[in-house]
Image (cartoon, rainbow over all chains, first blue to last red; front, top):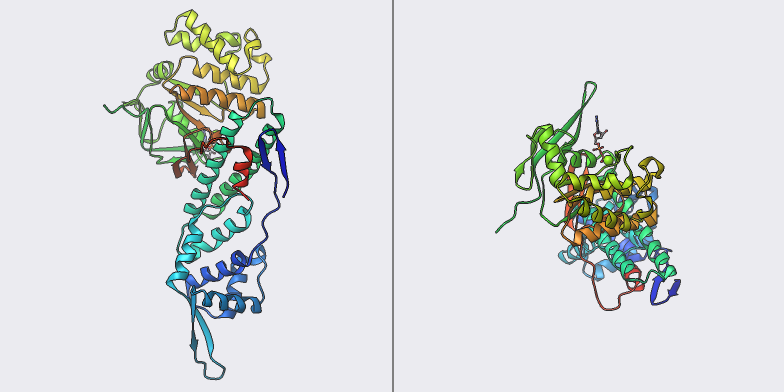
Length: 193
Length: 248
Ligand SMILES: Nc1ncnc2c1ncn2[C@@H]1O[C@H](COP(=O)(O)OP(=O)(O)O)[C@@H](O)[C@H]1O
Ligand SMILES: [Mg+2]
């Protein structure tokens, strides 16, 4: 992370995005898929691939079982064994109330900048599938949040001495980033709602 | 005492005719704007933003629905009554600025003030203030044709504000401007807004929109969001780092 100091203004110019954590990359998609309907491990892997296509690297089946085990241990999902006549029993997973609440909490919170493109994207794709949030509402909420940030930057620009040219350039850079994210949200709205 | 809203619309619809094909540009945008509000209208190209503000300013006839300006029914007015209403109470900046070619910049700006009943002295003072704020004081005696597009656009804004209208309608007022001129325009809009000016501004620029108190998003001629912009947190000694760090 780079931090540039200029007078009393500090702008963090970090623009590399946060790495996809297991939490975001596997746990939440699995919870979202299970909010739609109970499923076993292999079905979940297929559903992940179908949902995201090339947009997101699908984890291997081993990773999925490990994550399912953790989610179960955390009380977010539970498993029942379903008998199969010619094969060993199959474990079918379903979402618990606690799991549903965790999912809703995730879907409801607005996101800050740099993680937008991965995490908001996940919300946009997954949330309507689960019926817990509507895409239009997600886009509206995120847009308002960013407009609020933009307003802060404006205020900051007004209260920063006009002589502090570096500070103004940094603020302007932050505004341009935000503008790009807002434009992208508008595109999402045009395409997806 | 409850004041009438400056703008109120009831299910206004605008359908253009394109050959044989009807083009629905605005499809029932119910809107209420109170005195002193600064509203930004956003949305992708073709979503009906210009058509909406043209209807609010009487430049386009609505196909159906009602438009009320300061408590008076406006959509049923004749052309000449609309012209009178605009002269008294509505200022415009539109995508095409329509400055009067054979008058100086100064006269272009003073004219609406004079038409609205200001004394020559008041009109001149107002003009000097507006052109000064927009960095155009030195161009006062030029004909508009000698100005660059962005300068003409700023003159159009000064002209729209000259008679201190109760409603300012602005369609992409920063559309052709570079960053510095955009900042001047936004600063002036914020300044007149603080003094109570009601503003409806169409823009596709989120930086411009964030100067407003409220943003209305259009898509395909309908409102998809209408919400206040969350107020800036004004803690002691906030700096850019605090704002950007929020994103980390
Ligand atoms: N005079 C006109 N005749 C026919 N169609 C028009 C006319 N003006 C606008 N439209 C159409 O109406 C829709 C909305 O246009 P407009 O209000 O200019 O959108 P915006 O300002 O959001 O870009 C578009 O599909 C546009 O092509
Ligand atoms: Mg337009």
